Image (tube, rainbow over all chains, first blue to last red; front, side):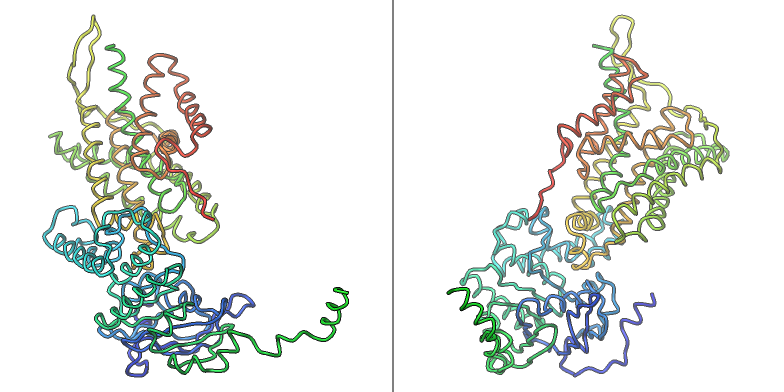
Length: 296
Length: 304
């Protein structure tokens, strides 16, 4: 495929510690510019958080990264530690997961609700299984190669289920799990792709404080022991400030700040974006008079 | 009693054929939410390929029937599978992501094109074939009435059961089946975990076509004559079967097929044979009024 070779050039320069290099990303929907000339770098073995007020374009960034949208302008370079450089904006959606190993979760959970917990995790590993079963035709003949690949897939699934404490519920239908468990299962499923970059869209949404803490530990664990880079969209600042190595702040599709949690927290432009400018609080004099007149 | 039993056997045989076709409708509906109106034509093509293969084997002088049957079965399945893949590739895939009615119209067009294509290339006259499997077992006598199950009926029933077992296993246990279920439940998400959605949809069409082609072979053996128009009525009835069982549900399609077969044969036996299609489609109307989701279908939950 022509696409394939275009998507994996050899002459692209990126910083040596970069995992995901976003350059001049712009996404327009008709007249609306959802993302405007956004550039940032997510580094290896780091948790990079993307924050910003509602409608800042955070999820759109994810949608561009995972092939949902084709960016209007911009380059998205993923440096895969084993497989080299991938230009995500040139890849078909499913190949981004299959070849570049970028995984993602959703703000509103999207499991396969009528499959069991275990099956959800095995579907995510189907590439190895498909290869082992010669695209499922040989799966019919009980090849030893296929059954060993299947065993391996189940092992990986078990590993992650144990890690998040869902092992006992492996045979439940995924749609019947409690909310918090569904969130964790979605992260497990993403990890079963064996990603190099994990994109999490508000993983703490709807979790109680205790579950939030557990999530922090899980994400830190993924960063430490699996060496996976994490890109995180989150509104819960207790999560963001606690675990991020690096924060990118968006407002109206533009990057307004970029740095360590400490730096971002004290950045006046960030405070302004979240709380508004003080001048805005004052009403124009005419309006104030109108209001006063109406009251009288 | 004997008469009833005989009709039961006939109905189950007929129902197996409808059920096999119905599975193609229900699978395609499950995965892309579209009624593949060209599916009846795929079944007709399966029947034609089986007749042609029988004739070729006859020319080659292969007269050992079990061998001939296996060869014909395999040839029919493979070639019709290719037809199913091609139809999806040229008529539906380019329209994916287009508005909802586009693939439906394309399906109707494909159906007309295939029908006329076969009419032009094979001629409009019926194609007869000499009986391949003859004889049968007499189960018991009652007065002067024999209850007979022919070897052909046994062949059809056994083959259907075998296909159903294999098929269920494929859907529930293999990687391909898992991908199909994943695509059915959430196509975008399946893409995001790296499932090649287009290929999975193609495979669904191929599987539907393979099952329909076996039905085509069965009809060829059962009735001995086929023509280019058989796909229309059989397709409509199989579609009815899929709706009756609950479209999207695989066991439902088989159950619907069996029910339609039984209704048809009992109606013909006890009432008038001319009105058997009226009875079948009348049942469809009743089901749609009183149980729109079909017998085994799940009601669609509106998400808020």
